[in-house]
Image (cartoon, rainbow, N blue to C red):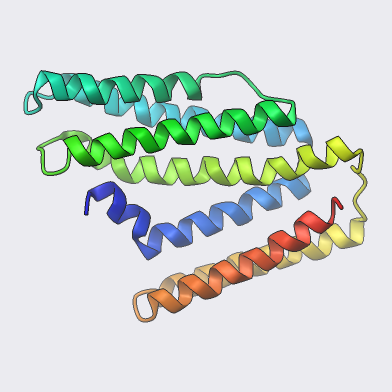
Length: 211
């Protein structure tokens, strides 16, 4: 298994991803749409910076054949282009942008697994950042799509008491994540299932706010 796949499969990164999803949902409840969109744009830029670092290390590497460099560089360039796209305000454009970014990311990770696994490549140190930033960006996309759905239905009013109740649930969930993180190595598989189910219940309640 490649380093990227190992990271994505690790319980620590799975917990990180769940926490990022909870934070993104919380932001949607406490921030304006413009602030939420800015969070998304910041997430794109942060992932783009990691990609740029990988590109720089790839160019400098003396242990990778030129044809391999060219293949990997082409995928990185394509990912860069997708991350550099401007803000997508409309729902259709938003969905399309998300799909393009993560399709390009998957293509890069696939070729990195094929071409760079087992190769002495310094950017291996950046894989953890790549996984973390991409998980965070995915969480922001997922949370923001509900706001865009609400706008499409012209259902933007949220009962304050309901919002505060959901915020309390999200914060309690994050507290639970911190506790479970300390116990993670003992019962990793069980924790993963329990925590995902807990977040799905909160996300269902979140979606109902806009129905």
